[in-house]
Length: 415
Image (cartoon, rainbow, N blue to C red; front, side):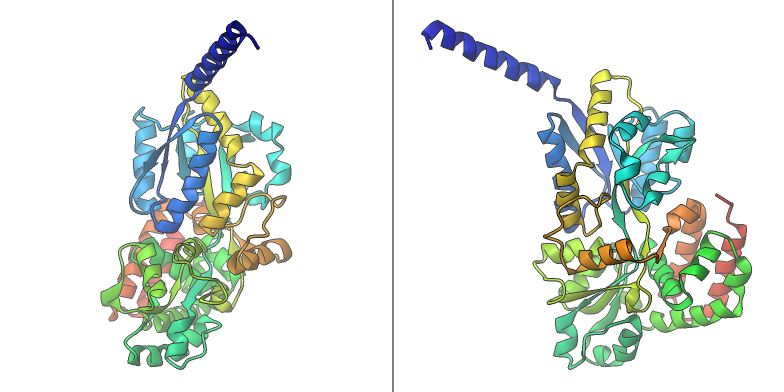
């Protein structure tokens, strides 16, 4: 190639690079993934968006979803929307969609055959309003897990528990060793714990009858009286002075050996991975608390607030498609501890806990909606406050808590 031709080629490549760089668009993404495992997972999404030619601008909000959701919704309503935001399946964005503030993703969802490739169907259904799709389901999370540190039990001369019943039975021996039997975080983590105990002790059908069908009579009746008595027994496992502020701090107590177990969603698995612990060797993950293996259809979804800038709009649609590519689904969910939304991915690197979750999802009918898909946010907050008081105040009687719980269910609006 002659010098003139080489110079021309170089000039063309430079101009093309500059044009490509100019097309890159910043997308501010709000989310509440700030723990070690969550940060490792969300970095995979950021990497994929950047590789697509746009730029992920991280807008992490410290704290839980209960802290982040009002901030996210307030910004959108106030006319200062982000490019994309994490929310949960359920009713978080109903009013925003009705107000015309969320981007309609139906066209790309149809072109990408989301309805055919994503499972379970409930996740995409939760993104659908009046036949239109407004969000991208990126994972399936389940809350019904008990996490235990094997070394804690073996060092105490105890066989690692295979269920919550074993943990209750072995609690005195752990306490003698100065170890908390069950680590617990405040707020929504208490509600999660009690939801799991209701499912384990009363069964999935009764749980759904109460939470979804608003069967207040069942909630107030003798069957749930037994359940709340068992919940009272579980309360004795918790050191009320050691209840942590954040869920990952409670998981950290198990990882460090200061507590024997924690009841938390499958996202806790990401924390064990960051700690270089191996499932089935260093720690155990027991679906359904070892009593009633089940998966709720919780998880995470991404919405894209309406944006009049054509470049941002195009970047939003590209990001929505990117999050569901097989490679990105695998990279994200392996680190998040959740299950991928599509079954046509390579999960050869899945750990013991993910395999257990996949077994239930693909070969069992024991799935149920998450509490956010069944109850409104205000009712969930009331239940969370009630149960937090119950676990932090040993003098509260299970019968009194049951009565107040049944009253909240009775007054909860139909969704």
